[in-house]
Length: 336
Image (cartoon, rainbow, N blue to C red; front, side, top):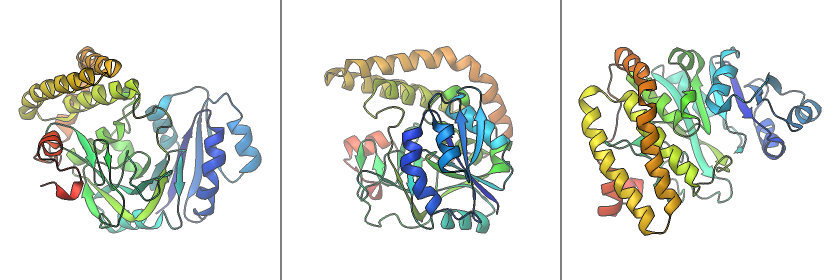
């Protein structure tokens, strides 16, 4: 299986300097091509790569296309069987390619795989944005094996089994290139956050499966673009989650889900307000307003998804909000 690891870069000289050495050390040339797609950087990233790492291939864009469109353009011009979307702030470990690629070769029904993702600064703990694979509850809230809301578990080997998941993290995403292209890649309208969940949803609806291969481990710094506590991140997560639901939910589930989400989002805004996080409360209100404004632009995508994708995505049948806050089940292994 021919493989290309693609890092998207924008003014990330410091990240490249810190994280490329581990990637090069643990990625034999015969195993995968290493590519940096540069989104019109204005720092000396490109000069640094040409000088220090001539073995790394470069794709140079004239401007910053953002995360989703940048990857779409880079993958479109990279011929291979499998592409690995790798964040520039990820440290890989020895043999990190082996298990995900073996799983893709063994399972022709699996389109995408992620490794186990642990936190770079606390290497014993799972990482917020991927952990050991992601799920979505019945009302559209994402969570992970190893992370529910802001509760992150220590990795003691409790999730070391290969498992099918709803979504694989975009921090280290192995995906069949032809399938990626066929379903349209990442949606650039999201700007940032939850694009990979939307992509995985489209894969499920077309009959593909998503898995985690936890014998492969990478370490993610995270928060490179937006800190977890940033109101902008709250805004994008709430807005994009609603757009994703509108884009992918079947007709019978859309209205009841949106009614419940309106209530739950209102409660979230009230919690932010009562805890003194006024800007976070405003972010939730703006997210819902902008979702309504953007919804007409997603109508065509919704119609296409419902036409081409007839298989329901494997959403968990319970509410993660209820399980976490009412039943006090704060770790994945205690969920139903």
